[in-house]
Amino acid sequence: EVAIGYGLWRLTPTYPKSVTIGSKHPETVLQDRVRMVMVGLGYTEVFNFIITSEEKNYRMVRRPVKDRVRLANSSSIELTMLRDSLLPCLVGNLSVSRHEKYPQRIFETGPVVKAEGPEGFSIMLSVAGVSAHSSASFSEAKAVVLSLLNSLGAENPSLEKSDDPMFTPGRAASIIYNGKPIGVLGEIHPEVLELNGLENPVAGFELELNRFLNKCFRS
Image (cartoon, rainbow, N blue to C red; front, top):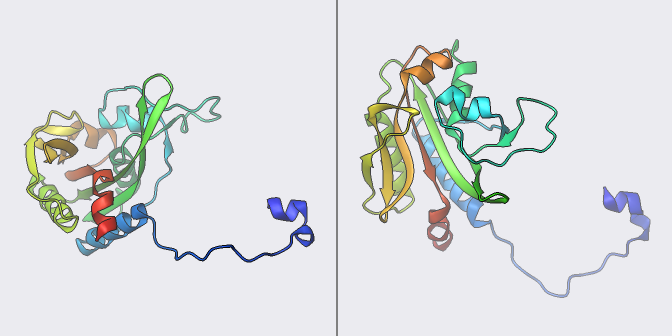
């Protein structure tokens, strides 16, 4: 658009001084691998806006409100902040499609934005998935996560008890890799299901993917 506005006839084409070979960005390589695994496990990919609201991102999924990247002068109460998690969006997707046929298994991979101090922030690449049907369980979410981590070359991941309020007490776990938490999995809390009009059990997970960028790029 800038070139058209300036006038294409004013531009003189030139050859580049050096020749380079293009390649996929490491994030694209990683996301492609994640998509392949998740689709192979029977999940359907969805795409949500990165802009959301405190209502959807926190209250509807029992998450405590915390520091976040907010939009200045937002014109809509539905678009007030940048998401810091993918799971709330996926639960919202299930709520919209709750009258459709079950089982429903969906996932998303994309950026989340974490606030850092009064003005700072970081952008993390994540993947999250939810499975909704009459027998959705912790074991199902665990199996999906372990399959995904195995495909990413993660050796010896482990699970530790999690008190994440989005999940049912005693049916949730933090995902540990190289001694650090990289995500969470479990059965979505009954109150969250009720808030979103969901009658079937839901199992879900979310993983940070940034630490796997170099591994995928090398391979």
